[in-house]
Length: 300
Image (cartoon, rainbow, N blue to C red; front, side, top):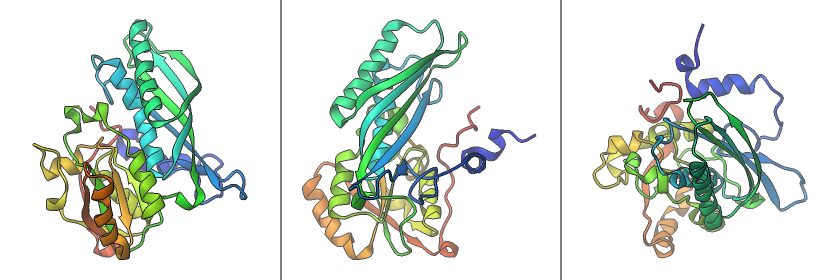
């Protein structure tokens, strides 16, 4: 009998979504950073839905400061709203904790979540707590609603062959600490969708080598990138920039006609954050392949 380790995360999701009713709206459901719900065709905004989970020993170590864990748990969700051009609104927090968890640790966890919401927006609406067997890993799950203006919505699946690929910030080496204190690119995404709307966008959580093929496949294309052009964090290699993951930067595609104007305007608006051209989308048969990145269920 096959296990989830045998087939991997993407194949598992593809199997599971076929087993339940789904929305017929092509902008809704699995396969993007957030689900998109069109509640009222006359409304200027769309509803965004997101859920995400952190598990001890996978996303953080047991001795990681709880406030940093809380920040990361909330900021990962905020980053996904940014990738859609949207804004978070209300949060639901579910905790599954072993009974020996110190109360002070849980309080600091919530302080970290609160710090993120105060800085980036969003209100606590509720949640749930559950026990897990003694000695088990703690799990923090966050679900959130958000919104996006119709004209600002960006999906993974709407890029075109010939579009230019870019990334914000620098990549690689997140395990050295960035994965616990990163800044979701909410402000940058809002500026992009209002001034130079990307043809597609997503955030980089599993590594460029894993996430770029997902964006290209969703848009029915291949890709070509120049590894030597990747913006790497100090002390990192292009291989780390491709495979380390948890960068939480934006990967975006832009129409070629707008690239020069965007690259000229970006450093004026965001002088401390690089925006780097790394390649382009091409016909599927002409594309390259990448290996690396985080693969759930392959953890020893």
